[in-house]
Amino acid sequence: MLGKCGSVADAKSFFDDELSSKSTSSWNAMLAAYSQNSFGAEAILVFRSMLLEGAKADSVTFVSACGSIGSLAMARALHGVARSGGLESDSIVGNALVSMYGRCKSCEDSRNVFDRLAVRNIVSWTAMISAYGQCGHHREALELFEAMDCEPDRGVSPNEFVLTHVLDACSHLGLESRARGLLGSMAEDHSIAASVEHYGCFVDLLGRLGELDRAQEAIELLPFQADAVMWIILLSACIVHGDVERGALVAAQIAGLDDDGASASACFVLAANSFSINCD
Image (tube, rainbow, N blue to C red; front, side, top):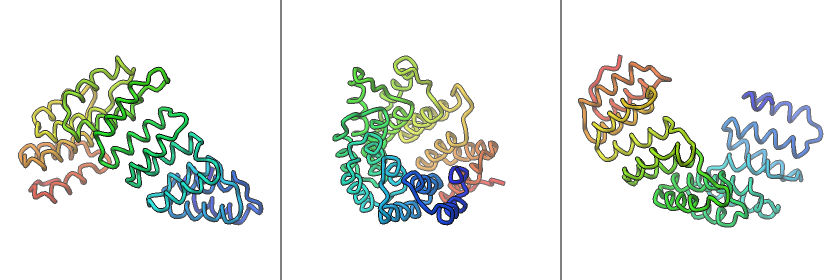
């Protein structure tokens, strides 16, 4: 509980001083406290201590440990421990391994784990499609989505996160018609309302194509008010394509929003790219 509230130091003090006998649940709680609060190195140290003291790791242990690793060598070592402990076949652990390897930019390892999963649920597909995106393998992400879409009989239907990754892949590949069709059919085909993240991917796609007029129009025609992130996507496209005049107007729009420091971030980007704009 202390870990969930962000009091990691208090959780560690209680763990060290008050628990004379530490069960697997106790170790898992401490590991989760570090993992949930982005103390990855500390989480791995707890995991190592747990094994050295002979505590039995379970699926909960490995999910927290997988979420704390960014090194491929450590990821493979952790995978080996999961395999030797007979937990590799656990669907929850398997999904965590797929995600872990994706963060480590090893799509080959992610796919090897994914292909060996006995049961692939929506979490499995989301993790693998996301892993391809993180590795820059956008065409493979689309191909996997198409394979997933061919398995409705298995009860797997895309969720909003899968569709975000697919739209992001379309953006990087410049597939405007594919992205437009997906946006238009989300509600009817998958009962999912397009979110700001989905529209953001489409605006990013238009920006990458240099269609800045259409990108701006897409923002202005949104069924909800665009946030600062959406405008920053357009601002980035203005920088890439050298549209200084539009960039100045967009920066002013962002500054007017004053959304979570977004105006300051926009000014930094502009300054770094020689946009002489007064952001005060």
